[in-house]
Length: 120
Image 1 (cartoon, rainbow, N blue to C red):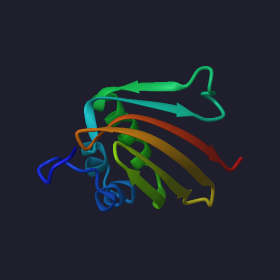
Image 2 (tube, helix red, strand yellow; image 1 turned 90 degrees about the vertical axis):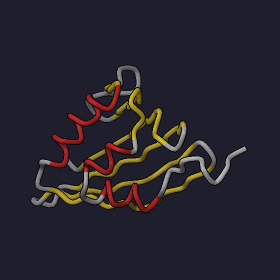
Image 3 (cartoon, helix red, strand yellow; image 1 turned 30 degrees about the vertical axis):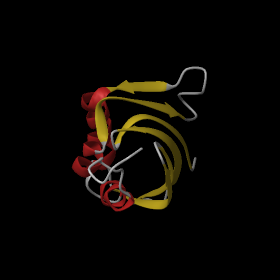
Image 4 (cartoon, rainbow, N blue to C red; image 1 turned 45 degrees about the vertical axis):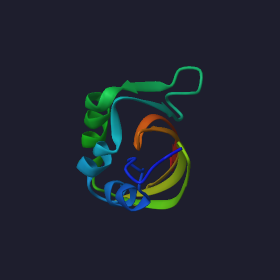
């Protein structure tokens, strides 16, 4: 049973991170977090798997260096699990949609599966 002193995963902080501050977003991950990415090029039988905040940070640095916008569409948090939808748009109009399921530990993202699709 949680107490007021327990860290909590916060929707507003997630929104701040997703919508423009990758440092805030990275701060939401546990040091040993695992991120699995499934898309057209990294399909379910061979997803891209990132281990730890360092690898996840490099990926976020790459993504947020691009000329694109990010918007947190929906977020549901229940106990030690959460899910959220993110929509993105490149400057040339190409859109990306991603859905994430996450497992939380001590208020931090411990594991995440991200499924994404984009305009072609």
